[in-house]
Image (cartoon, rainbow, N blue to C red; front, side):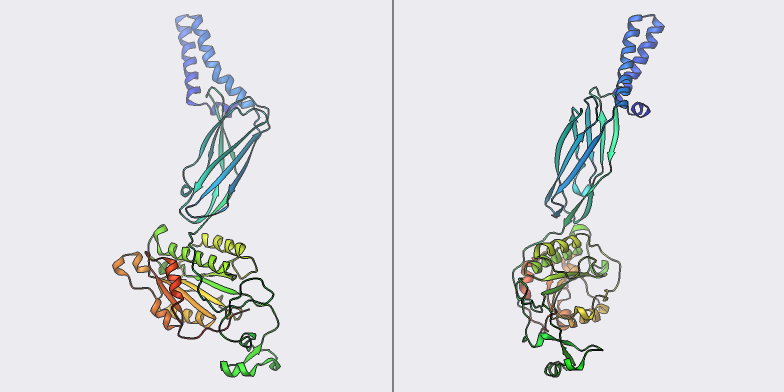
Length: 419
């Protein structure tokens, strides 16, 4: 009852004030007829509050989002199903679903006739130009009477996630190299330069049986090489994204970081569709849940897009190198880089040394500040380190830059791929 009285609307409080005034005036003026009118006006909101306060609404909400993974700029549909199993009089339901402001304004609905067995379906659309992971909900519900005297507040605390992935563009097919696929795999085979004999050996490690040393490959490589154990080959690729704050310029969705994330997402989808198992590495190291795994192209691409949707700028001044282990030798590495400084060069040399084929998309980040400040990016420096690199400015098309990679050649030949 206390909650019902506290839920009196402006109309309900106005009726209380009018009824009280009428009763007082009737007593002062000695008008019994006016007293009856005042009592009636005063009783209407009070009786409504009593009835509504004693009502037992058993409301249930089922909220679904379709699809739960959507590209930036594309709409998603939110479906609401509300039911009432309580025995209550008919009334009005005022709904407001809480959504982040980047998804649009908060949707509001007015539904009538919420009696026993009541069931309604409501849908609305959300859309975001900003990537990220958002929670839709909770929903607040205000139950009102047909006269508009009382409103009672309720809330559903459940939420559903919506992941908005970066924008992507289809990329043309170009020779990549640096990857092998086993005979038992159904994926497309991507072969590096060299013979089958070359790719069945690896570097000698402490404890390896000397009987496994492959002397012909050792003489050619200039270091001890041993035969690998029999195991199926995989097409592996490492996608590196430099997301350091100091390596990028601009703010919001127009920043060079967002362009880098979008480029990385397009490359991730392209590699997955070509049969690569792709892992995502950022300036902070290998992303959790994005390690090399055996999935089909659709599942692999979806996992990478979901990881890229929540990538944020990091304050770290230097690149993490913990992911550059013995197991990461060979394969294909594609780097999406921002500004490159002098202390980054040893890391980039080491990355190029660990890969069978090194490709880079170097963002001309200064052009995001001013077109006159354009420097062409770090392409010349990367080329000196053996990378096949192309620049990318704010007005350049990624598919054109990707096609240009096919015409760029590294100074050092590609090494064999990884297993």
